[in-house]
Image (cartoon, rainbow, N blue to C red; front, side, top):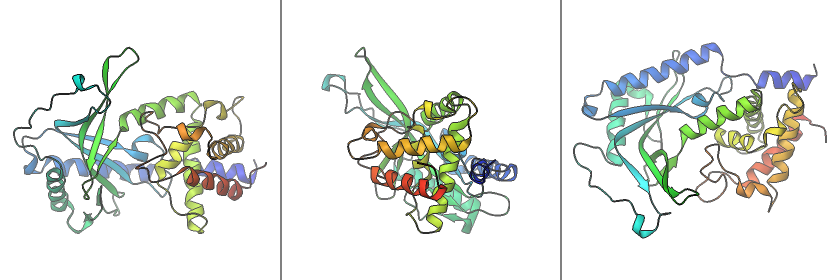
Length: 303
């Protein structure tokens, strides 16, 4: 085994058993705090683990938990794609509901009551619960159900079901974590379990590049997106190929396709719904292009 192959073997590893125990404990504690909060009496709540934790793309020593706390009493929707005659009727919301910012405020109360000074509510999106000896850091995201309406190929009205979160600045963020999870599992199976290994490797290299000042930090989800957009044929091509071969093919593909005018302009997130590049995203094609160049150099890959 080469030195590089040995390094990639270490980098592909998921969270350790100890870290996984702490992740699960953090999730249980969040659930308990919400379920025990009297302010949510009569409110239907759903818990949805998401992000790297749910998708098993956490890397060792970087294993926080993301969990959406979803108000199920009603849903928001977007019907902009529908013709005027097909617009969805807007029914008034009744009963105790905690609309918009009210739900976040009540969730903050529940988290502060449970965690005290370990609860940080200063973030724009998530309520952060600090790590301690028994749990990893938890990002608790107050969320609502969301439906995005569209026409299918037969002209019938359908909708994508996701979640939406109101940031403290009033901006709404829509995500599709369940589609992301299902598509990631399918791609991992199609690639002989190499997809998630490659995601972890790229995340570890990005961490290394940030640590030495080569690039600015990027959201870890971005690395998952880039690897997801790489065709299956670049993974495990020809059987149980070395990790070095896979990462070489993947990094070369991403670099080539993130040049101006290349195919990455049409890529989508792993949910296959949201465009990967464009307005509202925290990254750009240029970020992807630089990341892959620096990764190639950092790993010393062959041309």
